[in-house]
Amino acid sequence: MRKKFILEESDVPKMWYNIKADLAKSPDPLLNPSNNEPLKPEEMEALFAKELVRQEFSNDRWHEIPDEVLELYKMYRPTPLVRAYSLERELDTPAKIFFKNESVSPVGSHKLNTAIAQAYYNKQEGIKRITTETGAGQWGSAMSIACSHFGLELDVFMVRQSYDAKPYRKILMNSYGASVHSSPSQITDYGRGLCASSPEERGSLGIAISEAVEMAVKNSNTRYTLGSVLDHVLLHQSIIGLEAEKQMEMAGERPDKIIACFGGGSNFAGIAFPFIRHNIRAIAAEPAACPKLTKGEYRYDFGDSAGLTPLIPMFTLGHDFSPEQIHAAGLRYHGGGRLVSHLKREGFIDSVAIEQSEAFSAGLLFARSEGIIPAPESNHAIAAVVREALKAKESGKSEVILFNLSGHGLLDLSAYKEYL
Image (cartoon, rainbow, N blue to C red; front, side, top):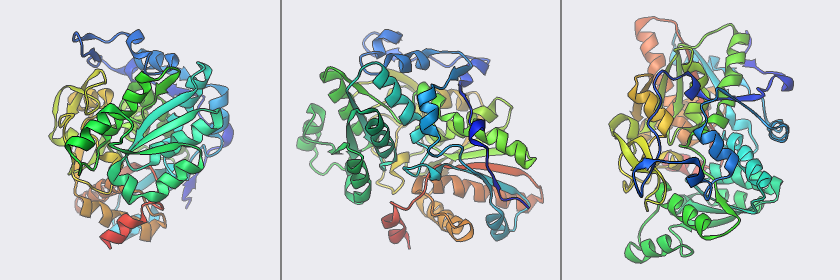
């Protein structure tokens, strides 16, 4: 029986998929916080490359992937689809479990799918410098590679807790040429203010975003990039699910459930959105320490702590929410992206909150059965898979579960050490 389903290089999708084209009801618009009017595209162009802004507001179903982006995708795409036979045996479940292995990218996560695209469009516009934030370091690492290729300078604001706990992520980013700053930092007004008022502040993604946005708007020829949440980011990640569609056909199976971990929505949307259009159920697995979809309120909120971003319609815990310092730093974001929140509100998406101990228990089970040590973020998806597989065992129902292994945990071994 075949375990891996691998596409040919020529089968890598040439278009990104935009789920907005297939929505019966349009999501609520972004708002300009100064007047609470729907945000206009030109109002985002001081912060993002113009083509990215066009994609953000587009309702076109398909967007052509530039040739240069496709060439760089060939470093690691197509990624494998794997049948997790050993995990199935460990769980003694009739469920068939498949995972899309995005950990094979050079930075070990799915983040490179949009980092390459965002760096490309900024380079095409003549931008020289990029600012961004990172939680666990996967996004910062991805932008570091992308900016290095296109000759762009990069400043990464890394959440202080992760900056201290994950030193090898910083070394990785430095190796690719990026400047990495512990956030809150002393190099932005917002960061200095926080350091003065709360010297023990360990940081959050919302704070790091505020610092990166501030640096971008105060420096000419500089733009900001975001690793999740916004529509254009989720658009680029759709390549995951589009590949998986073809690979599931190769396997002769149709998934009954799609599962992915959830922070702001990038890897979840990447694998789920192409399948949601076929009315397949999707489950977002988020940390119990930051359960925005499960326990948050749907309303307009800022995407950052300082209130520098547009107002986003989202399920949120509040932009000033300070989550526990869990190891899955990439999931410690207060709100869900606009599109994911809309689909949750409309009933297309379910969500579950996973405690850290359950996530690491599932991650170790996966490592010992399938041989891959998952990222702490991905462990939440695996825990949700285990839950669903055991439900199938109880009911005796054979169903097909597909999940996204969004990254490996080889630079997160200190987290596993603490758990063990």
